[in-house]
Amino acid sequence: MDARSVGSLDGAWLLSATEMRAAEARAIAAGTPGAVLMERAAASVVAAIDAQWPELQPGARICVLCGPGGNGGDGYAVARMLAARGMRVALHALAPASHPDAVGQATLWREMGEIGGWDGATNSAASADLVIDALFGIGLSRPLGAEIAALREVRAPRRLAIDLPSGLCSESGRVIGEACLDADFTVTFHAPKRGHVLAEGPARCGRLDLRDIGLDAVGGEIALTGVPADLAKRAGHKYGYGHALVLSGEVGRGGAARMAARAALRIGAGLVTLGCPAAALQENAARLDAIMLRPVRDEEALAGLLEDARLNALLLGPGLGTGARERDLVAQALSAGRATVLDADALTLVANDDGLRGALHPGCLLTPHEGEFARLCTDLADRMTGPTTSGPAFSRLDAAREAAARLGCTLLLKGPDTVIAAPDGRARVNASVYDRAAPWLATAGAGDVLAGIAAGLMARGRDGFDAASTAAWLHSAAARRFGPGLIAEDLPEQLPGLLRELGL
Image (cartoon, rainbow, N blue to C red; front, side):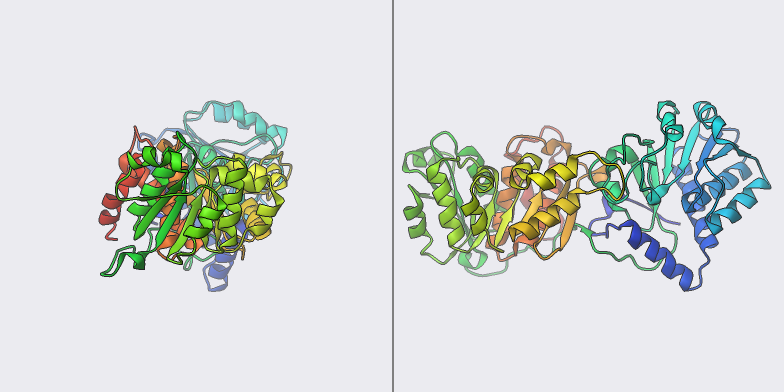
């Protein structure tokens, strides 16, 4: 079967364990026996091993750890295929096979080798060239027992997990309990699962290899963000592409707002105005040309600006400040009912003020990092990061969706696994992990640029959910395009070339 890297999965579905099982059940109901699917999965794992570790030749020592369910059945089949190729395979079963297809695979394995007891698993793993974890896959809902957790101490040169490292929650990417058998390489089937990209999943999985086993078209509830739809400008007036207003703070605090404003302009807003205290006009004028400037002393001045209905998107937060003036500006902006991005300081103000929280409306987009999210929704943040004793564990996806419904607006929860959630329950994940990792985004000001991209897209007429999804994808793609040494000011300047390369 074909292999696909995570880097090529833009726009793919991110499946829950239930959705994956349903896909398998549909294939079986349509006439493909479960045993055939298991054989396909095992053959895919063997092909992935060949591609990842070509140095493993006949005579290599392989330790396969099998659980009683379907994941264990995959392990029995992999063991048989590797042994047939001359590998020295030691197989250890945590418990006898109980899944019907796994029972059949265990029977086939017994014709070639022994099923070792669990008491010898640690020694076999310690002496192996490759350890294969086929214990639980996506089916685990409880912490690993001590007899399994002890395998964490084994320093095998290569560790492969079939579907998911044992101990990792397939829905949340969090470790259930305290132990996980981390992998260097994880092979999964049909589509990525939520636990592969959320929270600790990428670090625990190592490299992720996705293999096709002939199931029907992928479908699910949650998708990964993808290459944006057409962003090209057509002939027309600048006001046809919207006018974004970015509010800035006092003297010496304008850098974040300037970067956000530049990002809004680069993504195609027809006009961008930066509003700031009169004393900060000279500072901002020295750094800006295409972006217009307006003095905004207080909420009355903002109300006057907003009499112009062509100002159709607002951004408040980057470098804004958290004093009484800024609180009143946020209140005035919310009362206007327009497309509004709230970031940074504006989120702090909303978190600390019930009146502002109550003024949030469906046209708002909130863009918190985890610390800001903890101030906005303390209980959800606690559930998202607290101890896990059973699965499915409460995830970043769960937290963002509940917060969006509670606050009545779209929310973008920033991180390598950025979650975008709408108040109606829709959600997407922008996974900057594996081949799409962009570690350079961990730099001051990167979040301000993200907010600016989203505001520019909202000025162009996109709703908060679509703007946030597109902005998150472009933000990480721009960072990857630049590479190491990135600083936040570089991000807006990457957008024109990126869009040109994408044909947008």
